[in-house]
Amino acid sequence: MNKNQALIVVDVQNDFLETGSLPVPEGSKVIPVINKAMPLFQTVVLTQDWHPAEHKSFASNHENKKPYDVTTMPYGQQVLWPAHCVQNSKGAELAETLAVKGTEFKVRKGTNSEVDSYSAFFEADGKSKTILADWLRDRGITEVFLCGLATDFCVSWSALDAVKEGFKTFVLEDACRGIDVGGSLAAAKQQWKDKGIETISSNSLR
Ligand code: VGL
Ligand code: ZN
Image 1: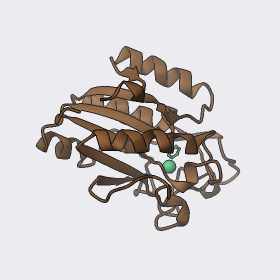
Image 2: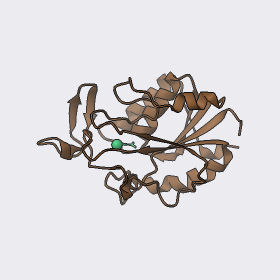
Image 3: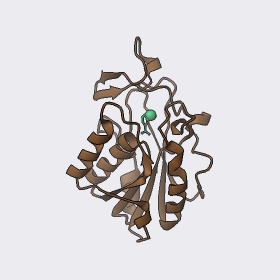
């Protein structure tokens, strides 16, 4: 691996595994693939969805809404989710079998209860920035490789924002799994194409 390449492991947390509160089909299948990819990178970022219990992306925090309904928020359309990744809960912890070394850079997002934050770079209003882009640039990173959960939400939004921040962006397709609500997976893949995001297999990493 080149020194200018970073791996961004998105939201491999208990609540997104098959037994979690917001299960991603086959979610746990990404773990062995990511465990093989991580040692190939000098720079690894781990993200965590990290919501307060009163987070507005939870259907339970709205009247007459159920999970997977769509509502309008001040910043646009919002899918309403089952409560998930509540700060300090078991569900918010990284998957136990993820081979974390402790040297990875951790980014927690979604902490503002009024705004969702699928992306590791910006909240969904497109305004509030995390420190991730500057942190990567400070380390000379120019290319990012994304993997994790879920392909069509946090992985995709992070990939699209990585492009906005000027990084050459790749998605490790076999190291992701999606949720696919309302055609979200096909829409994500079309957007990647439009923005020059390349999809590659983790087998091609050296
Ligand atoms: C995610 C839905 C809600 C994700 C996070 O990690 O893709 N999806 N919050
Ligand atoms: Zn979330």
